[in-house]
Length: 116
Image (cartoon, rainbow, N blue to C red; front, side, top):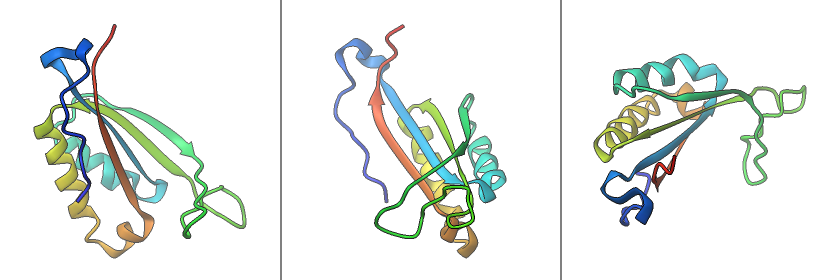
């Protein structure tokens, strides 16, 4: 399971601190990932399409060319701890499918505070 930074939010955020979440995944599983996030009631997220990735340690390079075909999508959203747990569970369930596991999903989160 993904480790989460559980320290207090930055001072500017006070009690209103939240999680900044990034999900990176292969474009071929976009429908499944987006449906999982929608099922977790993520109210708003930003999407970056056509994200290229270089993997110097494995076989996950996606450079959208003949040698390294494919691209990633990246989704960013903010949420409380409960919704983060829901999203991690939903995405972990997706990884039980061999095709989705092979395509890959990465979830990163850190504490954040809204400054403006």
